[in-house]
Length: 150
Length: 420
Image (cartoon, rainbow over all chains, first blue to last red; front, side, top):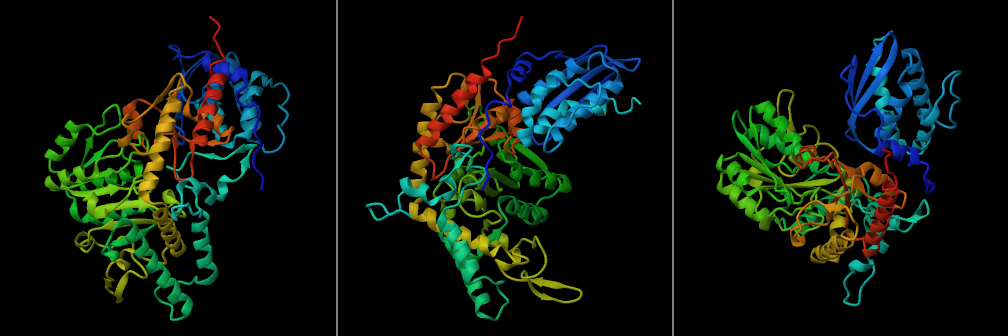
């Protein structure tokens, strides 16, 4: 019989607790061009993501939400990492991050030119299958919000 | 089962009957505090199911060979055992179902479809589990009936004004839970049932959290129907009970149609068998029923009064120990005699799912979230709570391990200070 080993604190890394306790870009944007609410029905976590998109670039980001530290820290980190990026870069980053959490086995190498940066701190979530959807909530909401911007 | 010096099985020794607790997960002993969700099973229950399946299994009712006769005998004997556990004398009024949810849906689709009409009211407390809420909400949509909510006080007890107001409107149905799966509140069943009857209502009791923990005599409860699940009272999943008064059950149309429930079938018509078969279409969960009977025998041997005392002892100890944690708030009644051993709490501003994850790492199994009570959560302004619940196999060390794990979680989450 195999059981998960007790895991040292690779999940609640300091940077995650920091983003959770002191979220960046929290609040609605008056200049938002895109606003979408995302919900995880199984746990009740909710995030409302605001984007200001100008000429194919996300110039400003804001979010409000309610949820666990993983979902809220991930939203805060998303806001920091996509601000200033083109929509193509944003999509590539979101897809890279999702693949990072969802790929079984080893962590896939990010594609050329994608800097995963601080998001690496969420790698610990991979060991907690039921929490992966928490880390992905804001990202799925982001992808849906810009779905028609092709 | 350990036999104590008095010659009765002892609840202190009960833990040894639960092999699942006798292991380590991730280097920690298993501290199982999620029995309100589903209880662990003692060897005696597993043994009863296994022994039946190894020696006597066959389909019931129809076979003309020994195995089928024996299986039929054991299945009907299981019904008698469970009836005895509840003080039900009219044994065929005890129906086996898949569990509380199916029992309540059965009532909504049979009694409800037959008896509720346009403008009729269904009174129910806002503390109800989704299983005793959604079937009635959907029935109300189908029939043009209305739900009349009974509000709750901040301590998780029923608000007397809205209770009186709901009953004044002479609802057709009053359905409520014996014990709140969030607050642990024990509702005063007899008093509520008598008042509802006086108002002309039929009374349904959701016993999912009550029957496993409180001595149960159906006549003393004074209700018309009682629904509960086996898996919260040491039995396997997929077996539960609906008990009802014969005069009501006999006027209800069948719920599921098929084999076993018929008397005769012609090309253009059918007629139905008598109780209990009429409500047990298809091959039932025979092993489950035998497991449930074994669970009733086990609990009977411990004594439900002793189970209640054990719950109260752990509850008092848990309250005392949890009070040592700064920023921990327990929901529900403060008067311990008015509550069962379900302890929902909030700990500082740590989200319940974070808390449950952190506790899990210390081997402490708790529930976190809305507990299938979304209207109630909205009422108390919470997205969810963290809930510890106890049963016969828990002891004070389990409470200690919960408190230690909470303390550790609290320290992790209080370490971050925001830069100005």
